[in-house]
Length: 459
Image 1 (tube, one colour):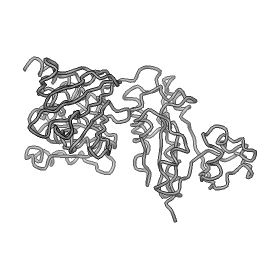
Image 2 (spheres, one colour; image 1 turned 30 degrees about the vertical axis):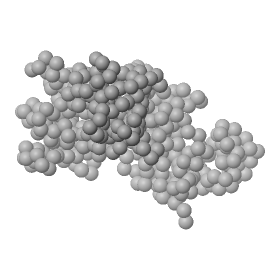
Image 3 (cartoon, one colour; image 1 turned 135 degrees about the horizontal axis):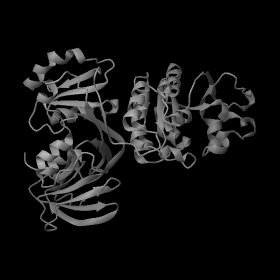
Image 4 (cartoon, one colour; image 1 turned 90 degrees about the horizontal axis):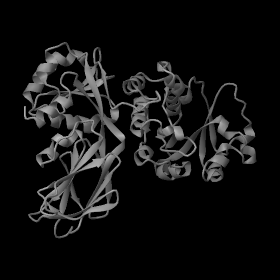
């Protein structure tokens, strides 16, 4: 028997408890449930009312922990809307695809006039050859003649809708009874669906929260703190990730856990600790701290092309770069937004950096650090020979960068993402992610802005 895969698509704007209950129901009847939030849709302009990164985070939070269920962020990341027939083509190598639809979508199916026939691209073909998991509600009259050839009926009784949630929030009312607890906190934290521009940071509290603790096993100082912090540990249902170590420990924690969509609170047991909180400030007061600042920071979406023509993507929190792999300088072509800005960059390499990562390698290469919530990112050259005097460029949040090796055989380059070697590359493309963000948490009295001031004024 092939694996049966339920394809649960929608705008999920926002995802509510009713969506989670549907996923839980589907997980009982299918081997796998794929939740696919759509990108911009011509028939649903309201999906762009909040940033795609927020919708992605809310979907991960809402469906977290549902058995055999995963969220595919492809459409949100690529800012596109993949039609159902294309979704079937994408996934059918993994098993037998079942499209999840409401019973009202089938009305008129006997005459070829259902919403699937008239509203879906290639709908008539899908009606005949595909499979449908039909959600039926009490009181809805379903004509058996309207059913597609391959279907299963799944009775479901649900309260709430995304429209109802949006309306409640827009008018300043509570919608906690229609949302998961984590999604509700996230929406409140950043003021989503309130009819204004969502915030990128927020003041709040970690009081009474419990943590998943990740510490540097080779750092004696971090290990010495563990006994006093174990009472705040809850590995089964944590509220945040407590990271003990240096910036490297935080980057490792982010790589491993960003899809959990939990805030990260770091305590510095290393050296600079730009992404961390100072231990003397953390432990001089009761823990977890009562006054903190949540900062939602974007990741980089990076595509790396190998000499064999393979393309793979990876996310970076700090930076990504290419550098010469031999004693010879690299010859690179740099495009920004499809405009060739540097026809031939002769250098040791070139780097792109988020604002949060601007205090790391970018700073050591001579670039000025940015405030973490600066709506910009950086392009920086390493030991540039040509063009003379060029060092760096500030990029807008919607920019995309393409770096191409002009002489891959004679002057090979390696790619790196957050310091991790990705091997030989012939090209690298990067932009700020449309689906991946990380929440860093700082003590209100020791925020990232204060650290930037200390760097700029050398104190």
